Length: 246
Length: 246
DNA sequence: CGTAAATTTGATGGTTTTCAAGCCATGTGG
DNA sequence: CCACATGGCTTGAAAACCATCAAATTTACG
Image 1 (cartoon, rainbow over the protein chains, first blue to last red):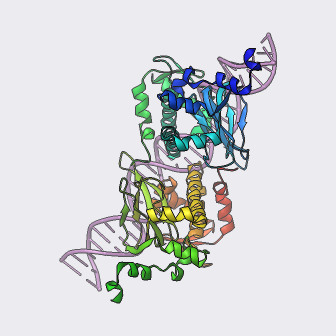
Image 2: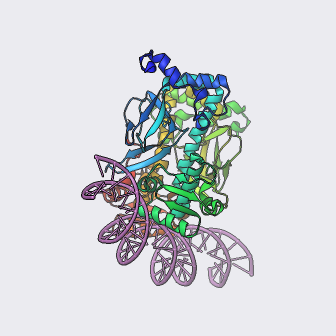
Image 3: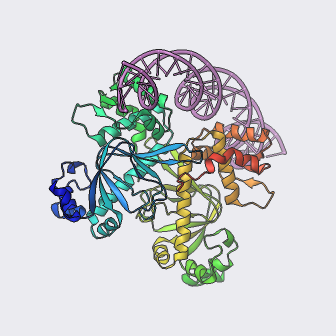
């Protein structure tokens, strides 16, 4: 192919044109004007297609790049001394993986593709420089980080299994942004969901079953159709609250 | 008194001489050389004695000062939409309250004295300036913050009531640093402990009772004497692990 | 098409919460 | 000085909730 024989810099520029990116509305650069978008475009090294199970990085590895998810899903996790996995977060289209310790030299956690996933690879050094000169982009990044923090704190609270699962589904609906009325296709399995919510796999199953019996949603494997959004929100309500009220 | 009629600047300097402070070994400036200690001394505005229940600050208030605890105990907490208190942390001698959002203009949480408490009032603006020119002090502050973060993450794990209570007591023993063999006098009540550990008050009571029956410690109201430190550590062990293993 | 993995369901048990009541210390007013 | 009220602490009994174990069913994929 012509693209494959072109110089690397040109190939990258062609492969990652943020202005024409079909997934732009999910991305960090959504709503940004052309100038800001192009500046961001400058730190995108290239795109990559990752198969399910592909390891992006592990603790201790030199943190040279971050990843902006175009499609698919990345999960991050830690391993405790006994080798037990502990899911820390899911990253969907538009999310950025690898900023956990923004100023650190090394990644503190594991990151793995949950399903076949497409990412833009970002140079962290360039990103730091860019954000220092662009208040708009810096603001976007800070927003993302504080969202993550709020999520982590909300997970810390002691809520019932149903509250957790309901909150998780509602959040997924917002983040996956399916077309109105269309079902929700969860990228991750029950085990990962349960681990993330700190529940047993079976408990997540049962919560889903009860929701289905009550007519709140329909479940078919990883496809979930929310039928009564308000009722689900009523269940999740205590979790949704901002914990760091100000 | 002569001190009361002296100029404010002089009075402060007399009242808060970090080099001669009897509680210096508990303070952030412990082990610092005279020069660094004096620089820190410069940001201490004055000392204050707070009665139990005294409010230091509330969410939304302009975050002009931080507090270094000399003696006593400060607790921080948030209120959810239902008005339920959620204890976020306890600050003992040597701890600094009011850095929760280091760069924010306003405090994000409540802070109240749990018992009669003595604090040094620190000017946050001066502190920022000082830490930017003193790597040693900056390092100390970062250490404190990452300790808090590690604590918050450890609390997020799902541990049994006994594990939580054991870990709490061990941490208190280290932080209150009683004389060897002397009992531990907890400043806070059972309700605050339970709320902090996300347990019912009764569950904390029962854990303490069981520990006493097993001979791990002796309980007399808020005075706790640890009799078998190793056994207590064995109970708490899973909690002590670094969650953010790297 | 068949095996392995994921999901679901059922049954059981353990831990913690909840509700309720009693105890003990402290402090107040008579 | 005592009676009494108050709030914190403790203990008991019951129920709720979730984890665990076990097994059936479905799905994914070579």
